Image (cartoon, rainbow, N blue to C red; front, side, top):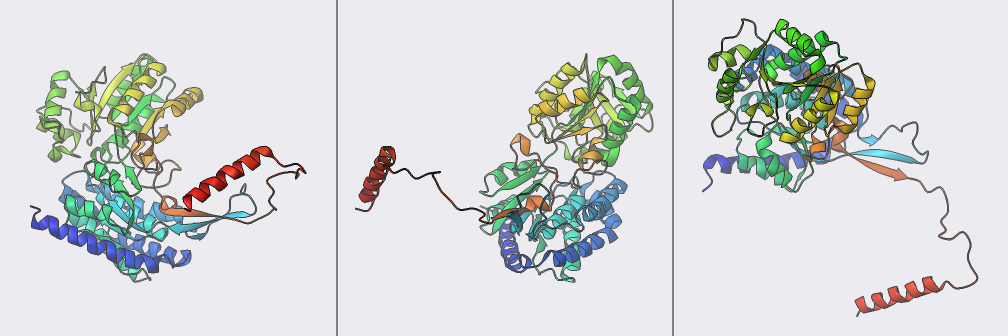
Length: 483
C-alpha cells in the first residue's frame, strides 16, 4: 500500500503540473522583452541570497564547501544572464548570415518542464534551469533531491516572488516540496508536462526514459583527464588539482581519473605531490574504497563531497596536512574496481600509459564503462593528437588545457554557462549540449514560396506507360478501400 507521503507527493505533483499548464497559456503569450525583465529580476533575487543559500545547502546536504557553492550560485546568477542578455528565443529568431533569404525561424516554448535537481549542486542547478526555462517562455516545476528540499524550495520561492513582481504568471515557477519517487514519476508522466530535465539523478533515469516524454539528462560519469607528453605539466597538474578539490569534487564535469603519458610521468608525479596531492598504496586504497562504498557497491552517502583529509581520517590513512586530493594508482580498468566509478569526492584514479595511443584506448575504456561519457579533458600542445582525441572519443564535450570543473560549466571556456551538462551522446537524453534556452524551445521553420512547381521539365505528347500503370494500380487500391 502506498504510504501517506507518497499519496501527498502524487497529489502535489498533479496540482503543480495543472497550475503550471494554466500559467503556460499566459506565459507563452509574453514577448521576449517581458521575459527578459522577469529573468533579470529573478537572477538578482537569487544573487542576493547566494551566500545564505550556499550555507544552507551545505548544512542540509552535509557535503561540499559552502564558499565554493556560493561561487557556483553567483556564477549561475550572473554568467547565465550575461550570456542570454539581448538574445531572442521566442518569436521570430535572428537570421544567420548563411540562411536562405526566404526562410526564417520562430521560437516556440516547449511548455511545462519537470526539472529534477541533484543534492550535489542543488541551488546553482536550480537557478540555471529556472532562468533558462523562463527566458524561453516555459513554466517549470522543480523536483528537489530528498536531501536538498529546503534549500531548493527556498531559491525557487525567492525567484518566483521576484518574477511575479515583474509580471511572471503565478504558477510558472514552482517546487515539489513533498518529495517521493512516486510523486516525481507522476509529474514526469503527467499529460500536461512537455519535457523532463534530469540533472545528476541516476536513480530516476529509467523513470525519465519511460515517462513517454522527451528528456534531457545531465550526468557526470567517469570523466578522464589525459596529460600528454607535450603538455605544460605544472599548469596541467594545477588545473586538475584546482578542479578536483573545488567543492570537494562535486562539480558536474570534474575529473574522475587522470592518465599520464609515461614519458613525463616522473615530472607529473612530482608536480602532483608539490601541489598537495597524496599517493596512497594498495592497502590504503582498499580501506578508502570500504569507506566510500558499502559492501553491496552502493555509495556511502555520508562520504559524498567530503575533503581529502576527512576521507583519509575515516579510512585510517595518515596524509600530510593540507592534502587536497588523494591519488589511487591503477593499471587496468577492472569492472569490480570502485575507483573506475564517478568519485564524488577529491579522489582520482591514476593511470600511466607508455604513449598517447595507449592513453587513447584507456580513455575509451573508462568513458564506456559507466556509460554517461559526459566530459573528458586533454592537456597537450600537439594539435594533431588533440584532433585525434576529439574525433574518436564517444563523449559529449572534450575540454583542452583547462580545469574540467570550470571548463565544463562554461567558466573558463566559451561553452554555454550551465550546471546541466547533457550526456546525450551516451544515449541518455536527446542533447549533449550545456543546456540553454535554445534547448527548451521548438524552432518552427517558415518558408515562402519563391518558384512555380513542375514535376517534369517538358510535357511529352506521348503517354507514359509506366505512369499509366501506376495510376491504374492506385485507382484499383482506392476503389477497394472505399467498398
